[in-house]
Image (cartoon, rainbow, N blue to C red):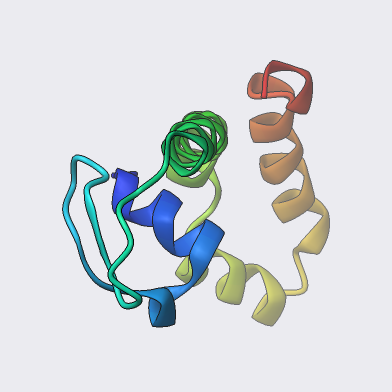
Length: 97
């Protein structure tokens, strides 16, 4: 699950703040109060990360498992593995991201 903490970390890194709450409220190491510009950046980054997650999560859930991939490699059945992967890509195309 994506939270505003993810957005803060993505934008500013972990070394720039002491604490961050799920609401996006930040306790900065330098002691400053979050500016309106920083709040807007955090909100925009949060929206971006949610959009990526909404696109990737269904694909991840339907891709062949690691075990299935290993068996396909060991059984020299890469063609079938690629067919399974392509079916997921067709079901969830990047254009919807």
